[in-house]
Structure formats: structure tokens, C-alpha cells
Length: 241
Length: 271
Image 1 (cartoon, rainbow over the protein chains, first blue to last red):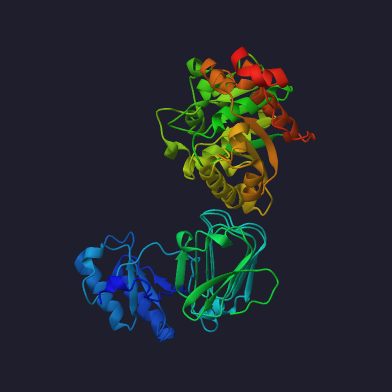
Image 2: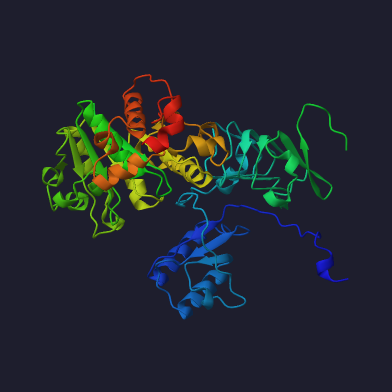
């Protein structure tokens, strides 16, 4: 049997958003590395097990000095998971891949001793449910891997809501909704008027073209039934399976 | 207490410039001092709609960059002495607008006028964000078409995040102006209804301007429609919108040029 004969075999892909440190060296690099050494001497193992990106934007490095910089960081046990601002052609096999276009989450100026405790743990402490009062306008992206998202208004066409848990929309869902993005197959999507462009739960997705047209404009809930996305009207009655 | 109003939409061709001119003129007709400012640097149009294209000496960019004084660049309207225009530059582009320069010009305008009406360029880039930056009130112009409504929704999101008022945590006044409304097409289901548009955008309605040949005629004449033919349907719609903008309560209706049963039947042939 050819692969084309089984169009419905789906590969599960998940989105994962995590907070990474971005290391942005400054020129001259020798002085910067000396500085890093002094700093690492005070906080040994600071980078151990943490995701780190290297940002070389504006450094005007050539291919050779980039390789040297990566080697110097490797020597210091700073493992780089991606390089930003470098010519992608310079990043050969065995070097970290190029990355671009991340969302900045504010400059984390690391001062002496400031990272002694807590630090990265903050991301995990966010409240379980994120409540958006009012509509989610077109072009806006609400990402909340830590739990449920409740929207009291509508989610516009061209807007998206991504939640680690369930998504509750008290207006119309006209944009995209992705629940259970961190691998939660019991997450659900609820909305008051279903006109979505795209939706998904735990890595299984469907576009507007593939939806049951009878559900359009209705109050629905969407959930995973094993490996199938099921959509059912939400009418207060208990649903049989 | 002067007010800075931005007329914006996201999408092009929905009637921002026409509405800026018509609303600006209608505000000036009430006796308030009004400046209309064209932010569409590089693609200026407001001067044409206002019929002042032969009188532009200095423009917004000259004032922003300090090459000319504001009073040198302001063009007084020949029909309404309370109305002035600050034209955009046609030879420059939006990068010539600086944030500090725009802030200074808007502050100067605030001191001279009761209303500063800024005509935003289409898009969500520098020109559009600088035009909305200092606004107290936004008029979001939208046609009853799905593409226009989605772009307006995007603009409302920007108004709620990128304006000075939003950054200070204050609520920016937002109003929806539906333009090019065609009652017949809406009746046949070829357009979104006003209710659909309002439901999607969920901001208060300032007015509904019907599609009309008068608007086209006015822009060819180089006069805001509220000056060129003050009794036609779109002009009445703009005047009602201005009364609402000034805080009056006016019942919402779609003005029509057809007055009675006979004109409904014979209207087109008789006109």
C-alpha cells in the first residue's frame, strides 16, 4: 500500500514555548569572555541544563570568529541551542541551528548574585487560568501554556489563542484556538458561536474546510475522543459517546 | 479643551480621507476651530479632496523637521474660515516622520484648534501608528465587507496598545463609522449587515454613511461633501456623526436620498 492511500495517518506535532536565555556578547570579544569567566567563577554551573541562545546581531563577526566564539562558549560549558543574527550558511553541521523571530520577554539583566534563587522558576508560577476581559482582536496572539484561557468576548478572525489547558470563549470563535498545546489530551475548547478558521487539541488540528458545517455558528465544545477531534453542540444535555 | 481625533481603518480605499474632510468641515460648520492633518506622507490626497492642492507651500514634514513654522504650513479653507489643512508631503516617505517631531506639532495644533483631525494612512506601519499616537478619540472607518472589518479589528487592537493613552492605562474613545453602506445590497445579503459589523468590532457606532454618487462628485470638485452638497444623504450622515461626536444623542438612521413612494419608484429616472 502506498502512503497516499492512507491520507489520515497523522503525525502529532506539539508546540512548546519556553523561556531561553539570550547571550549577546559584546566586542571586543576577548574582554567579554574574560568578563564571562569572572562571572562564571562566582556562579558556577549557572548555564547548566538551561536553554541558551547566542545573539550575534550587530557584532559583525566573520565565519571564523563565530566558530571560535562557539568553541570558546563550549569550553566554558555554555551549550548553545541556536544562533541568532548570523549568516545561516556559516552554521555547519555540528553547530547550533540558526533561529530568528522569537518574542522578546524583556531584558533580563543578570547582576551579581541576582540569580541566586528563583530566577527561571517564575514562568511556572503564573496563575492557572488566564482571563481576557473583552475581545481578542485580529492580529493578537494569546499564548498561555500554564493553564486554561477564558475569553469573555469574541476571538476575531486572524487572532489566535493557544492554551496548555482548555479554552473557554463566551463570544464567537472566528480565529484560531489551540488547546492542550503542552500535551494535554483532556483539554477542550468551548465557544458560544463556532466560526473558527482553525482549531486543535494536543497536536491534532483541523481547518475550517474540514469542519462539520452543521456546527457553524452554534455553541459547541470540541474535545479529543482517542485520536479523533470531535465537535458537538453544547446544549446543556449530557452527551453520549 | 481641544481634542485630537484620528480617522483610521487599516485597509485602504474605505473612505478615511473622504470622511476626514467631511467630518472636519462639518465640525467647522458648527463654529469650532478645526485642523485636518494628512499623515499619508508620500501618497497625499487630503489636499485634493479639500480643494487646496494649488496652495500647498509647506507641509507636515517641513514642520516636523523644523524647516517651517506651523502657521506657515497651515492652509486656511476659502469656504470656512474655522477650517485649516496641514498637508502631507508627496515627495517624502513615512520614515521622514519622527516621533518627537509629530508630538511637538500635535501639541502646537492643540493650542490653536478645538479639533485636530488626523487622516491616517492605510496599513499598520509607521505612518498609521504615528497618526494614532496622540489621539484622544479614534474614528474607525469600515465598509460592510469582511476584509475591511477584519483590518479594522486589527487597528482597534493597535489603538488599545500603541497609543499614548493606552500606554498610560487610559481608555481611548473609539467610534465606528460605517461607510459605503448600500441598503439594497445588504438586503440581498451581499454585504455584512450593520449588526454583523457591530457585533464583530464591538465598539460604539458613530454613524452609517450610505454609498452615494455625491461623494464621488464632491471629491472631483475638491470640496468635502458636507460643503459641496450639504443636503445629500452622505452629508446628513456625516453631520449626524459630528453631533454624536460632540456628545449629542441623535437617533441612528441611514439617511437616504429617496424621500417618498414615488421617488422610490421614479427616483433614478427622474434624477
